Amino acid sequence: MAVLVTGGAGYIGSHMALALLDAGEEVVVVDDLSTGFAWSLPPAARLVVGDVGDADLVGRVIREHRVEAIAHFAAKVVVPESVADPLAYYLNNTANSRTLIEAAVRGGVGRFIFSSTAAVYGEVDATPVSEERPPAPVSPYGRSKLMTEWMLADAGRAHGLRAVVLRYFNVAGADPRGRSGQSTANATHLIKVAVQTALGARPCLEVFGTDYPTPDGSCLRDYIQVTDLAGAHLDALAHLRAGGESLTLNCGYGRGYSVQEVIEVVRRVSGRDFAVRLSPRRPGDPAAIVARADRIRERLGWRPRFDDLDQIVAQALAWEQALESRRHVRA
Image 1 (cartoon, rainbow, N blue to C red):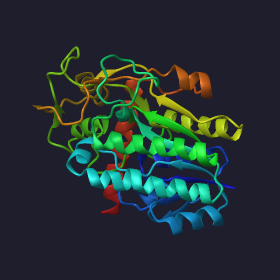
Image 2 (image 1 turned 60 degrees about the horizontal axis):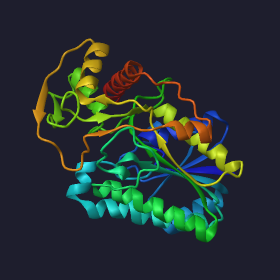
Image 3 (image 1 turned 30 degrees about the horizontal axis):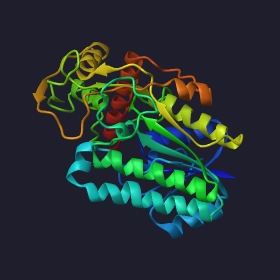
């Protein structure tokens, strides 16, 4: 019996694949490699190159590998891009998820873990934000994820599919053992971009918005370390295997850092100064969003191990240096 990880060659998905393998699980990955990397997966993870929107392919994978649970990460994730090209997001994030959910129901897969996002909350007037807050996404990205949450809830009522929806806040860092990290060259994650700038791979770091109603005028976010996030998925899987009910849970630490604060941490940890350019706000970016994260601890027993921004930045820095060494070896 295997766990199917969609998007498992990507940033968060590859950490989930590693966590499952570390726990002795059988893992099969479906990834179209549009943003993921086959080399990020160990040989023990069986990689099927393809699209989760291909119903025949997914159905065959479920049958051949006797899939008993699905962890669904495959998605487009850039908020401004979703504003510019919303239909691509509704295809990749919503329509393809609908195909995957139907394949799960048809294949008798009763357990589903969904990679959702804090973007479903939209503009919040107070933080931390709890799961009780009604969703009000302000971007096609957030709406595309919320639609999948609705589909899972409806499939649960109609077909008995049990799902844990995990609403991520800002994911950062890398595997502490150096096996995986954020590898996409044009990634927009703040910590990765700041680290690349500190290392000279980018000429400057652009700060989008300096007039938000926050202490220093820049956006405020809750950063969760990626291995801790993978651990939350393992806890969700254990919950479902024990017969637990469907849940929707925030994944964050309950503490916010501004863009300017992150920049200062990157400067301190890297020991390097770098140029910063101040720019107008981007569409779809809320001013501040921090998790109320007590429910995931109570319901899943989740206990984070890497809740330290300096440590997260150090991991990102080490991974970026490893990527640079890899490029030199391949050249």
